[in-house]
Length: 337
Image 1 (spheres, one colour):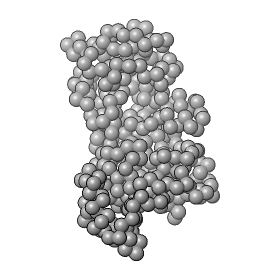
Image 2 (cartoon, rainbow, N blue to C red; image 1 turned 30 degrees about the vertical axis):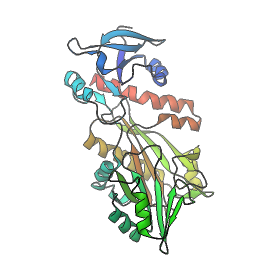
Image 3 (cartoon, one colour; image 1 turned 90 degrees about the vertical axis):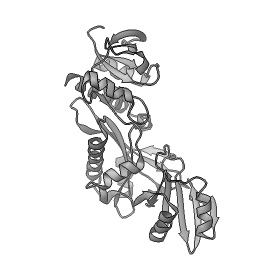
Image 4 (cartoon, rainbow, N blue to C red; image 1 turned 45 degrees about the vertical axis):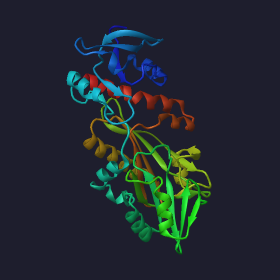
């Protein structure tokens, strides 16, 4: 066991992470849960939680030569200190919660600009301008997650409708002023206003496309998995979905005879390259895209800590093992470089 290659899982919690046990065994590597307060910086050792291949045990071990950051949020201070010892970018996933406005600005300055819905920071003035321009807009938080607080605002013949997750409005206003008063209770400068995109649908249910982009043993971005979330029939968002299905199948139903996957794949890979170049070392992200009924592709959102477990809905055990194995392979690549 002492000669076994080891990978650090940098975490705020001194607890096992069971999902990586079998991939670690397949690769014949040891995992070490590394928490900042248990690191002995002088001796370059850590009192870690070590996966031996059969069990998790507490042990003092030499700091692994590469770490997979499992903190959620901005880059933790411990990353810089670890990289001061181990070398630059020996800890990957510097950031695990993207700011939607920052990501939009990054992509808007790239060749992907044409694939982005018009987006600005929320102000009453900006909402008014977007309603005049688009008639339907999305209002959502800069750092929201799991589809919460994604509001649809629309105007028809001087009447304003506010939706919260469903196609039936939760409130109706006879003037823009009344709508703005309502929005003041929750929408501030940490919200975005965005052009509403009508997603393509199958049997009356809209769908999106998620690409899981990871780095593996070669250190290059690649697509590890893809799926589509099919929305509930009464919803304009896919975050709470009616079904998780194969992307190939739903594209065939929605756009028979069209070959759209190559374009969607390259857009996802380019998005990963762009954000990493600006935000620091990353090893995995997910990219959510959609098509409208005119086959136009839109980039909807990027996630810095993608939910791997969602791919279990596809019922492919081998795929799940590969998805969890990729970060370990990438860590091995970093440790050896």
